Image 1 (cartoon, helix red, strand yellow):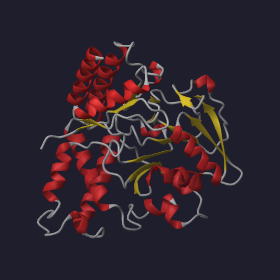
Image 2 (cartoon, rainbow, N blue to C red):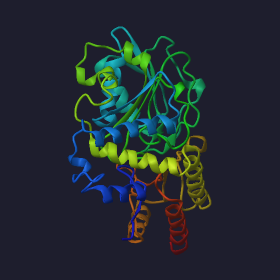
Image 3 (cartoon, one colour):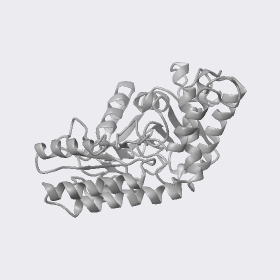
Length: 361
């Protein structure tokens, strides 16, 4: 079967070996006569997979002692509310660095739970073309936490240097760039990420949280939403998304076999550099609106001179076997999502297509 060149922004492409293993084991895993989907989450077979997935997360990200890894449900959007429910106490305020649609959504949800404010925003006329400079941050030194969205899928911006927030816990939504490179987890109080872009299928949210924050978190919220509930039960308080965790485990094994996050970063940077060079080399036809220092390595956006040309480009690209290139409905244009599992050969094919499109346009 020929694999489609899949640039979808999420759910996104996954490593082929991880999918092939799932295919082999779908009906019968480890000679049990049952699919992993049918196994009890309390049984030995799933328990081993579950624990391996937790340990691979800790290993690949070098998660230090004093942090817990949680597997949750509800998507990153649910975490927009769950984070302040746990960490934002009465009388406290939280700071948000607003760099895109999802950062705005996180702030909106926090305001429902408690007091929250934008400590910086780079929005101009409804668009974002960069992340803020350190000098632009108006941080509250007494804030409960500072929240950032590390990569912005819609506008194609990314934090390449973390903001200095002093002693205030830094909370990060990393849904679209987690594990794209090695990470110093100790710089964060909490990280959360929907799995469906870099890590696995939809249905799973990975949370990495400092135990001190969990212990100090509110206990007057529903049990299911308390981080301590899931930490203290090894993320097995209720039935977890077992198949999503299984496939997440498969993906992390492939990352490890590929050489870990250092090797993943090298490939990701090569893909992004190749595509940005192709865009910048033809400014009469392709234009990247994002300032260079803020350009994303995961979601590369660009425009053509007219909407008609963009429609023609997208139609021709799909005819050439490339899908998922249409920009978000709120901004239009072209968006190329080149998450971890996207092979560099796909980017090379797109670059060749772009050159041919220019030649024939």
